[in-house]
Length: 155
Image (cartoon, rainbow, N blue to C red; front, side, top):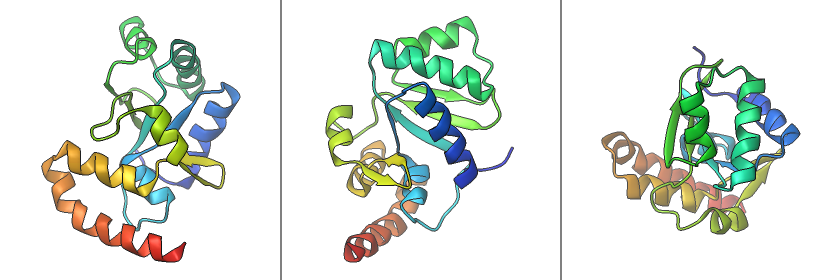
């Protein structure tokens, strides 16, 4: 299975737009869309936890080719905090409650639009990585912090 790239991001953006899903790219995939020079195997999506939005998300995922069991579709509809999808054309992490971010609404206000992609602000991406405190995040955090410094100088 191919890793995250611009074409994959376009597929997600376009399907989610057709279904009016409110979401943000977060994590390393979000950082990559901001220009971070790295790779990742999946798309990390912070999704608004709203009943109607979650139903639209299920429909968009089905359109993209994900094989959703009834149980999995129900978990999505209820906005389970974290759901990994590896049963479709690419891997996706659906995150309804990311570590270190108070609310979707706050992150939405701080978002950055990159060529039509709604992306979490770099500060939210860094804060989420710091709060998650996973080994792989601790290892990549120094590079991400340097990228954040560089990005802020570009503005």
